[in-house]
Length: 146
Image 1: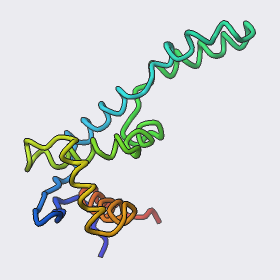
Image 2 (image 1 turned 45 degrees about the horizontal axis):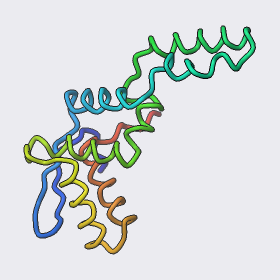
Image 3 (image 1 turned 90 degrees about the vertical axis):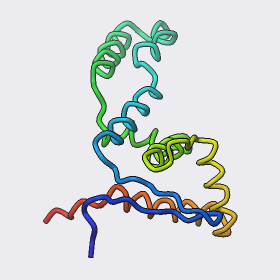
Image 4 (image 1 turned 180 degrees about the vertical axis):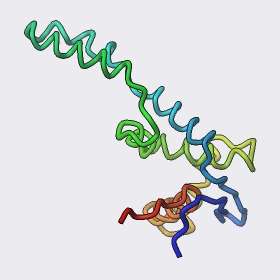
């Protein structure tokens, strides 16, 4: 049976249990805001390079940068997902999901948990697969459209 609504789940590592909370709106908002802050300001990004282009391209670049700067990216946007799927993003996601039940958790401790998981499971890939499955439980799955 497919689970559509996320739920809390537990990871077992080093003889300890850690509870990951269910994805909720507050956690999704925190993840999204953190990821947005990691993205460069589009206007700042072109600032030092725009003069290297012909005038018609400068206008196009500026128009695009202004449009991108005013766009508020959502959790599902590719740019946000790219950040959240990075190593730093995964650390942040796991930290946020652990915070409810483990308020003193920090990213150093999360890294130590992941290293211990890799050791116990025999490889980094197996640890990542295990955590990925656990994160799917927290997030849930959407029904397939028919």
